[in-house]
Image 1 (tube, rainbow, N blue to C red):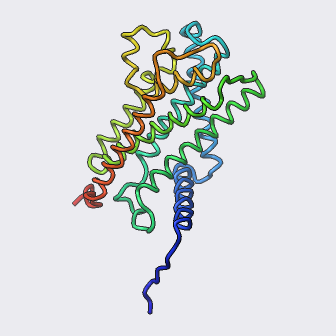
Image 2: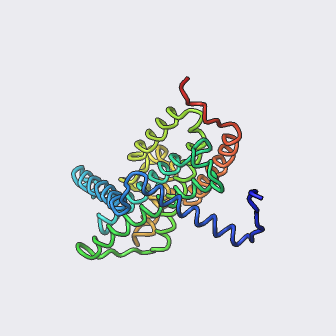
Length: 274
């Protein structure tokens, strides 16, 4: 009499329910740091703007304008900063998503994959909005922006985000096993990318020995390829977006397998004090 009666539902209905759930998880993640949604978005814009201004004045101070692409120097800085921010924010959002031991997993039909997708899309929305607002005001108030290939530039923006999602999934799957160590690794990687991303240099201008320091990093490839799409007079010769795609797909595959293994063995009592 009081038993819950299940109804047969179509794949379309289940898919729509999943998308709706991902949307609500994304909104929840955006509100995690600030209860006011507008304040949270304003903080994301402020962080990107602050990073942009710091990089602009630092590169100007050290005379790095000479090695930049001929054209709008601020656009050159933006092409590095926005890719960097999107990448590291995706890593932080996905690595901090609700895992298999979270209390959110007790509510059906919630599962870790929905949590990952909600966190990843929430981060993408936040960084896309921040970059769009900053570029709009720069274009309208300071200097008109001219992008040689906007579609290619947007593709590299999404690829920077996707590589961050893949790395974040690996960190998330390892989090229940060693939360302190994984948090340190995540912070170190994010801080290391301030220099290792190569956003202050051009791959074409680096000698081979110096270029080897950056070649391992997918973000180095996406930033350099972005500048090839943004500027008409720059053609990347030593980087490839194929590497970033394969890197991201490999990380996602490893992350999915590791997350499945962790889900089978994780226990909420692991980190409880007796």
